[in-house]
Image (tube, one colour):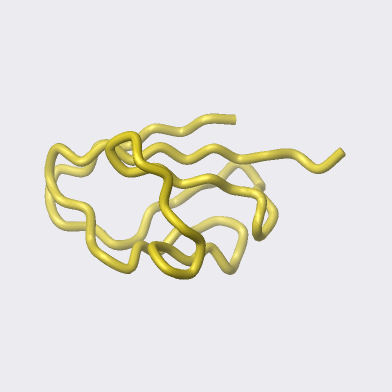
Length: 68
């Protein structure tokens, strides 16, 4: 599953509601993969919290992986 969001202001939290499991998500800002715990935290299965807020025109991409 891929989810792309484009914030219109300064945002730190983003909802990812596709039922992800912790540690099964890739987060990208403007095409650059962010490092878990250094750049973002995803601890509850539905919200991703960025360390540095996203600003207008940033493109955030969330890739949720399934366990097999």
